[in-house]
Amino acid sequence: MKVLVVGSGAREHALCWKLAQSSKLTELHAAPGNIGMAEFATCHDKVQARDIDAITALAEKIGAELVIVGPEAPLVDGLSNRLKKHGIPCCGPSASGARLEGSKVYAKELMDRAQVPTARWEAFSDVQAALAAINRWRGPVVIKADGIAGGRGTFVCMTKVQAERALQALLVDSAFGVAGRRIVVEEFLQGIEASITVITDGEVVMPLHVVRSEKRRDHNDAGPNTDGMGAWLPVEELYEQQIEEAIDAGIKPALADYAQRGMNYVGVLYADVMFTKTGPKVLEYNCRFGDLEVQAMVRTMDDDLLDLLHRAAVGTLSEAEVSEPTCAAAAVTLVDATYPAFERTDTITPIAGLADAAELDDVEVFYGNVVATGKGKAKGIGATGGRVLTVTATADTVEAAAAKAQEAAALITFEGMHRREDIAANAGIFA
Ligand code: AMP
Image (cartoon, rainbow, N blue to C red; front, side):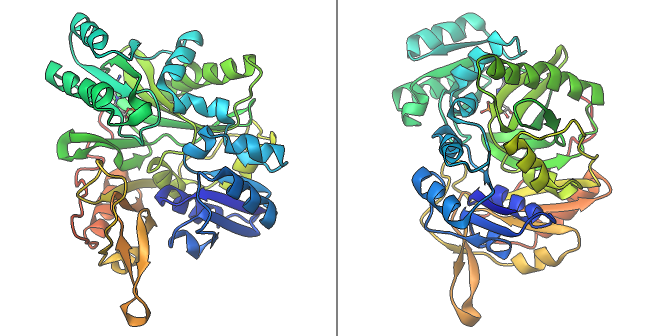
């Protein structure tokens, strides 16, 4: 099968690493790809992920039999619809499916309609009205930009001052432009947070491995929210029954709501779920694989992911279950000093120690914002800011996998590099 992967980050690198192991693969292409993905795929670096015309033209030119879309933005823009028109199978929802991620208000309205348990919420575009509600509610709140804000539009506010600052940034200073012109204010939930990913062909729902991640930038859950500083699986701190309940109450009703409206949701759906004392509650939906969660997940997956994603795209998923994780895995993100304020910078900083880290047993390093530098003997790899690398490791236990990933990460250096050293510190501990 000829496959095109859309995207250029560590998530897409991890997907290519896994797809390359499939006996069904004949050709792997990536657009735009990155230097890590180039080990497995022909990279078309002039074709940008959000350029739907160019992606479609490329898919036709190479005769792609499956397009796998990494980031959410092209899906929200309608890439899947366009590919479908051209008869090219795509593992990713249509623009209407991707609205689940593209608008928090849309997702919350759908959750209410489908009776999906979630945090109490209200939407606002006016600061005074939002402030009045926060005063009325009392207690901590979470304030979210309605639109796509690259994972940085959510503010967990433990104090009124923090809430006022978040409202100022979103509604007055327009820090996220149009995406933050409307906001959701919701109740702060406590519990164990986990990512539940399923793939679906619109009918069959196939749960993949559950992953947990560290969202805050700094040690001991301090600092701003990020897309994820570390991840691990298996998640032994949740019972099988709790996960089933989350899928039945949190994911299936959302998919059924789409089906009832005559719009089958096809592809990956991943929900951030808070397992509270009163049961699972959905924090948000994403219409693609988690960028970090999947880097850990592919390391423990025995099944042929290419086959599963193709079946989802063409509507032939069967009820067969995905096998249990083969081992434990942990992932550690290496970011630069500007993250999460900036996703990428213009400066290129040399990275040292990459080869030493990659040489360790059971370690794989997936590339995010990196570029090739120099020529000949001066050849190297440079960091371009934001999320630079994901270091993953496998072992028999989460603790050992996390220790190994940290050992590998410690060998890598670049100016301004930051990582959390307490990834998975709470693994196995009940809330
Ligand atoms: P989101 O942008 O909705 O994925 O939120 C990003 C992160 O903020 C989540 O992964 C949680 O750690 C945290 N968060 C979001 N909503 C809530 C909530 N209602 N209560 C507690 N934490 C939340």
